Image 1 (cartoon, helix red, strand yellow):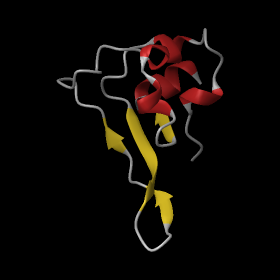
Image 2 (tube, rainbow, N blue to C red):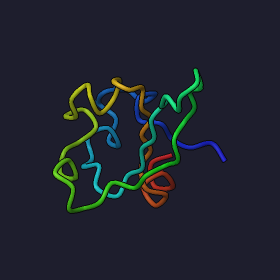
Image 3 (cartoon, rainbow, N blue to C red):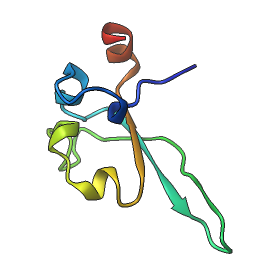
Length: 81
């Protein structure tokens, strides 16, 4: 299944301007001994401080340092994809 990835959408897309609570993210991480790989997808809890922020409002530390991918909830993917 191909997921919607927020960084691939235009800045004015509704999903980039929807609070990220419930969205999933993963980072490209260093695992030691020269090995980098994607982490597992982690769901953003609604009680997290960033839950009320949109993808466009997130700081660079949440998007590029380390490299991160974000995707919306499956319900929103179906609605807007």
